Length: 259
Image (tube, rainbow, N blue to C red; front, side, top):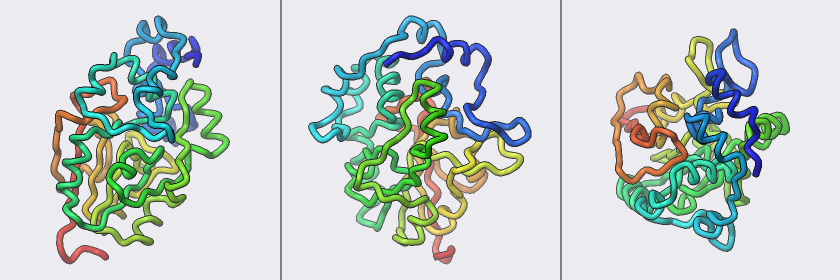
């Protein structure tokens, strides 16, 4: 896949969104900018204008196109820039690892759990829990915007139910909600967000919420003002250009909260 020179130019202009804003503020989340998807180094992009994902497809995907569950060490043995470019053209944000899935299973501990904003369905599939996604990236205007930045939109597989996060919580009434790289819904005054993003306050009012993301990309979430725990786990592997800032946030639902 060709990564056009315009992407390098976009990086030199700064992290501008690919869609319109509210009063000059960005309404497409930072992780949808190529600067976060591939690399912060324009020269690295310029030296890798052509990228063939097929060799990594054979290594990372099974015969059904599902992401194989590999260890963090196996994924980190891949050149980081090459892996980020593969994620870019294969619509992956988090790459679930054996260790992360085992840790999440221990945290879930048999409770009813779902994944929202599941995208390609990798995490929920390996956890064996119901998955849903709003399919927002499949909207024609979003497909076009992603194409302009050389990035594939998520195309959820058939076992990812078409539900936004609120609708999924209403339908399944889970004890635990898991999401990775989910973007919050933009509200006036926010530093960033997405007009089709999720109302995460709705989630934390009704369930324990486990969010996997990156401090730089997701550090402006409003719900980070609420009491939560942060876990910097050594086996989170993502498309982030600052992997040391990958993090799991957990908001635990106290008894007596809204059901």
